[in-house]
Length: 111
Length: 115
Image (tube, rainbow over all chains, first blue to last red; front, side, top):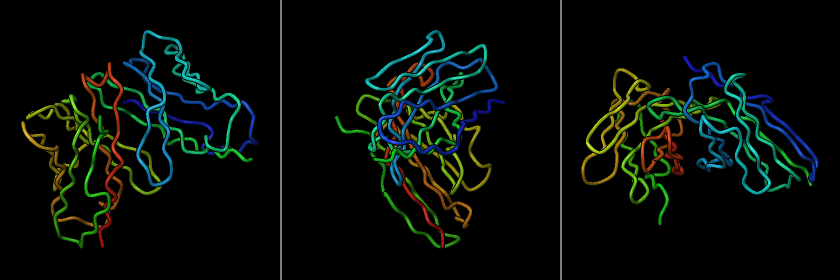
């Protein structure tokens, strides 16, 4: 049974810092791994999707990596801004396409 | 191209009533997923549907919950005889192809409160 864990549960950084969010999964037989952002009371916004055959994906200030052998993914946020404050969720995709989510990391970027 | 739409956004029901949650996928998407987010918990998969077919319902509670995605119209998640423990945010997501190869796009959610 796939389990996804995210560390840390919460993170507070000053504006401008680079930061890394961690995600680990127990079953390396994933099809893809997605990172999402969730703002309070809102839905999820897809940030990056890494196919199982890929090692990383980049979008703007975001870079996500995937290491299937170690069961880990990281989301790197460069030059953080207050607008980046949100909960970040990683999710591993099963063979049927369903997503198994971690508990999330709540990020606060202080001006 | 409108995103995934869910309605209602907020729903209040008394114990024992029925709740009907609707999800209209993005245009051109024929795959729909339902997830539930209980208070202080993460998102949990419930069911995966394609038009007129349930593909994976491994996350659905055995009783009182059902889902459909008819040929025409939105996908419906139906909860019969609601209990307080059903209070949660229910999200649907859609994708163009099979989810393992495609990004899932999420709706804004329906927040169900059972009194």
